[in-house]
Amino acid sequence: MTRLYQLFGDSLVPVARGRLANENLIEGWLEKQPDLLGLELLVIGRQVVTGFGGRIDLLGLDADGNLVIVELKRDRTPREIVAQMLDYASWVVGLTTRQVHDIAQDYLKGRLGAAFRERFGAAIPQTLNGTHTMVIVASAFDASSQRIVRYLSEVHDIAINTAFFAIFEQDGQTLLTTDWLLDQAEVVERSEARVQAPWSGLWYVNVGDSAARSWEDMQRYGFIAAGAGEKYSGPLRRLEPGDRIVGYQKQAGYVGYGRVTAPALMVRDFVTGAGPLLDQQLTQSNIGHDKDDPKLAEYAVGVEWIKAFPIAEAKWSDGLFANQNIVCKLRDPKTIEFLREQFGVADD
Image (cartoon, rainbow, N blue to C red; front, side, top):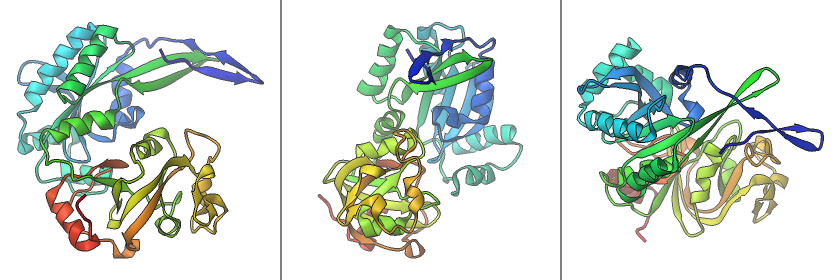
């Protein structure tokens, strides 16, 4: 059970749990801001009528053009909502790219391609709905139903997960917290593996050159970084010494190939060959923002860059793999062959 505490002097005081008068509020919030759950998606429909007489609360597209079904538990029993989600998925799986565009057109009142580019900064894939993900949103979920979701996801590689929300009330304010039953990135990855090529052994990593971090610094001092929230820094923990990675910069292309030399650490604790990272002459010193906050700080993973290019010389070709994930397994054969040619990526 999620607990929330307020700091008073040297003491922690528990914040009282509250209730929402109407769970439809959650649906509205998620429609406007799916990032509440850490979901990077474009909502393309609300209360979407299925061919079986049901209504999907929210239907969205992720950065890869795959569909995401979001359903609130409301007053249904946990087992009822799991069965309902599977029923919805049995309809969604048959949607063609044209049908997805039609659903989005009705909701967005405009062209899906423009909305997709605005949301993800990339052109919409030619083929949509290669796979799909199911997300149940609930304030509580009994142990038996949690076992069912775990079984479907971990044993049968079905992309189903549960997001929990909790309401707290303090000093006239209503606070909302969210959490997941399973790691959502792993749920999606297991499901995609069933319909994609075998894993190449390469990790795809977003470089994230920005006002918070510099690709030039990453090349010079041997690291990759992410931060400003656990949903960004957390995926770096998947990388282990010896792993091979390729770095991608959004709207530019692939910029680096290397091997991981050290696991993720807060940047305040990360040491380069020249000494502590934050003591170096950095192009972007903002990487030290919130350095003492474990949730908001930047984290760095040590990397020996085998071949790297400035962002202005990034390598790219139409049809290559790219998405918004901080870290994910690279499987696309066309992209892997391109990286062999441009970076000398070798097979393990």
